Length: 551
Ligand SMILES: Nc1ccn([C@@H]2O[C@H](COP(=O)(O)OP(=O)(O)OP(=O)(O)O)[C@@H](O)[C@H]2O)c(=O)n1
Ligand SMILES: [Ca+2]
Image (cartoon, rainbow, N blue to C red; front, side, top):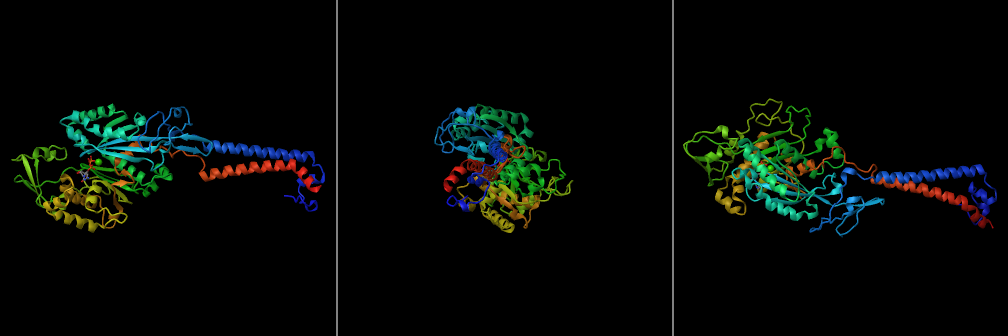
């Protein structure tokens, strides 16, 4: 700035030439005006362009509430018809959430819901998931808000009364209706996926399996939700969706992660493998360094059902995998009924078997080991039973029965997992406890589960060590997980993410600039505009003020 108090000391500046009464030449004034006009226009255009581009609606990611509804829970939102017509919604409830688009436009988004029923071999679980609609492609935003355990057996258990399979789900559907605001019911997708129990029933009795599916389909169709199908999923899908679930919940797909998932299989080594053990099947899923799969599915799936049985001379069957003092009677006809044992059917002179526990971990483990046939492998490496298994790699999240059993035995120590020898010795000493003692100590636990923890512990160790080849060295790469955050580890979340297109086919659409660059550019453009205007103002007003100073 020129010194207004002392004309002599005034800094000589093109503008100050006017203070001397010297008129600037017309051509240079016009030139300056032209430059100023050009710069202002440029700054205004840049400001508008940056703002418009940055705040463009992101088509796939945005959903608006469409109906008026009532809300019973603090994290759900009432909606208003205005939301149907455009991005501008009117706030009608204190529960509403407003998202500002950098001061240019405002929009309201509400919660979305999805329901998945996991129709397992032993039971059915209904899960309700919730996420803010506008963020559906962000990892970690989908959360389990409810789980309901269906009373009674798994749906495959209704093979003799197929019409009862559907109604068995009614109570959990009612619970879902209460959890999800009624305005959202119509647009809430509901999926049912049936696993090993139904796969086995389909092999045994296809028409019964169809009738069960049709019964559950009818019940789900008559619920107020958006029914999307009830089907039997393959073991490969179960493994893959379990893998998606845990990696989604662990945040391994965050931002660049989705890109990694889609574009660079190499960087997927940063994901966790998934180990699932159900009542009638088990899956291992992980990303292998070996990208050229020798096995077409590049995943492995196998069914394991029941236990090995021994030469039977009489109807007493000593079983080392049950506690000493434990007894159970089973019908031979039931035993040979399922497809995994039917080819071993024998004519026996008795109709029932009396299982008598021996509580011998070593013997139990040896019997189980015989299930894993490692003698033939048509590939460079196998788990067992001729199933391709590339070298193990990275961390693994182990859930379902892996978790139930390890959790019961207090062997799920995180973040410092127990060493393999500690796990083995714990299971061994648990198996050695007499049944009466076990029952007394754990009277609060369902007898069916309790009686099988010794077998399940030995089975898990056989599967992981002899089957998959985990050793003392990489055992601690296995993390036994029940939940991650508020969501259960399992295939259902991954299934829903896939079917609702929340696993984007390409990197999620986002604003072209990062927030920092956007703010920086806006500030820069604004500064240019302000400077230009200030310059223009000085150009036209300074003479007077300076003249005042000189007078
Ligand atoms: N609290 C629990 C719940 C289940 N289990 C046992 O864990 C096994 C697996 O249960 P789950 O994962 O629910 O199996 P499903 O999904 O029904 O079976 P699948 O996936 O094979 O269809 C069952 O044998 C059950 O006895 C357990 O020990 N403790
Ligand atoms: Ca399961």
